[in-house]
Amino acid sequence: MRSKVFIIFYLCMGYSHLQAQFNLGGEIRPRFEYRHGARDLPGIDDKAAVHITQRSRLNLSYTFEKKWEAYLSVQDIRVWGEQGDRGDASTFNLYEGWAQVNLTDRWKVKIGRQELDYDDGHLFNPRNWGQTGRTHDVGVVKFIDSTFQAHLVAGYSQNRAKNFDSFYEQEDYYKNLQMIWLNKDFSNHWTASFKAINRGLQRADSTIAYDQTIGGNLYFQQNKLSFRGLAYGQIGEGREVERKRAYMISAQAGYYLSKKFQLLLKADILSGTDTEKAMNPLNQETNSFDVLYGYRHKYYGHLDYFYLNFTPSTGLEDIVFSFKYKATPRLTTKFDLHTFYAQSTLAPLSDLQSPVDSRLGEELDLGFEYLAYDNVKIKGGYSQMFATESMEVLKGEGSKDEIANWFWLQASFKFKQ
Image (tube, rainbow, N blue to C red):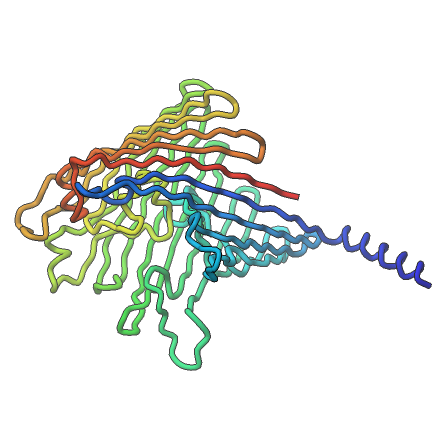
């Protein structure tokens, strides 16, 4: 009898294996950082900061035939030494947890905590540079064809389950979100996309401020030449003001001089509000473009002076000269030189009638990436800011005469069953 039970058990296991598939994976990613002017200009008495952070992720995916799939990703984020041997603080959390039902070959529904990564990430991306990453609690309806895709995204946020009231106590996130994304491949060389985003932000008086971001991206790739451009307008309400009128324009051209050497020239314009207008207590309009949940570190300088923990109301103009050199199949080096300008009039708070020069300074970013093994990657870089007096005015503290630099070294160990 016992042997029959085992035979039935193994037959069921074999059938289950044919029907479903589990995959286990993860990543260990420690990063060393030396900071003396990252994010903010250093003062005369400021000393350098040194720390090591680590991200440890464990991922589990499940697929049942072609009918549905699920994915779980948990992570622990910490600074080495932040938790003593008697501490009970936890940084363990759910990074992703979603299920996707494949209604047909073209229609899919994905719901749960998930990454949103669209186009080149200017407005939505998983912020992989940050150890914590970024995910959204949303539902996504997808239509996928050979040359066309359409996504409808919707989310509603709340701090906790309540019996009364729905006030959302999270200032840096949205109360609700709706987005439609369309993407079309016109040929092997041309691709275009369109996004329309409606976002609701919780105000302190319990009302919801709604803003709308509408625009699109255009991509071209042929042989050694590539181009991508985007333009977005932003209207609606601001969290602190009644009206928002802002825009963003970006263009990038790339050319491969050889199989190993690529040149890039990029320009970004993010509209801003004049300092005098922004500081007027009677002003009820902002012209400062919000990049929503897009890349900051990748596009606006690795020192993160803009849009990471600090969004300049004066907007930003960023001109970038960049080149990549693939020295070997496993080693790539990169050079970026940024020149930053305030997009609108910048003036010191002590004298709003005396605007300063719009040029904020230059930033040099050097980096390398080495693939030690197929699943082990070593990356590092050095950045330095060459600030002007206008940067001091914008930041409100620190000195342009101090050396503002940053060095980092990171190892990524990925594993998969």
